[in-house]
Length: 79
Image (cartoon, rainbow, N blue to C red; front, side, top):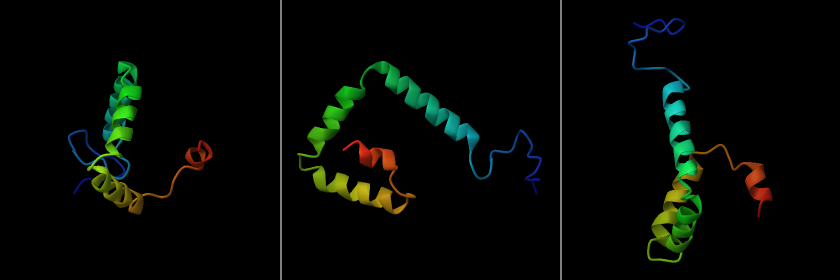
């Protein structure tokens, strides 16, 4: 059994709040933002909402929202 207060370096389980995964995600987001393709991908997503794919995307959004703690109030204020 691994001591949660003093995990070993060879343990693949980091417990709650996986710092390795969070760092990898943040680095990937940084790389994407630096590609300059953010606006292009936003336009593609907007077009997808006006396509036969719309219902699938709305369903996926609903599933994601069921698992969230709520929308960031700053996002609501941007509209």
